[in-house]
Length: 164
Image 1 (cartoon, helix red, strand yellow):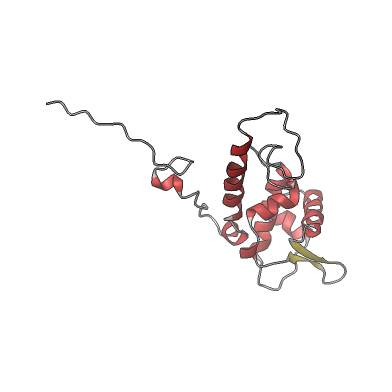
Image 2 (cartoon, one colour):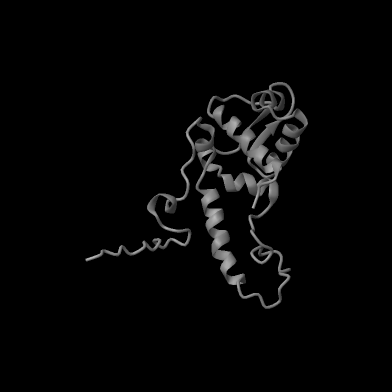
């Protein structure tokens, strides 16, 4: 699974906007393009999509610009990705709006929903405030530090054979 470049750029853009959040400053596309290194036309396209999704508010005219529509802590990575790419669905079987599974009697279809929910929950657990702070990495899921595998079960440890 890989995010589109546009979704990746939207995350970069909103993380930069979150760094200015609370200052009462309206941002403009030119300023964010310079700060992020993204091309201005791409930033303008993203501003339009993110505004349509309700993640940013924009004002035209003198003194206009845009700002986050909600506090940075209330906008998750899942929100940003869904604004650009639509619902997070690892397979067509998981997308509630579509039922175009290529395999008519798929025996693994039921397994995809919980996996998809875990991925979405992980993305929803990271917010713009966390992403806007540099340079500390965001912690991964808790199972990575506990020795559990991705199912939440402890990994079996090999038995030690002691010779007598």
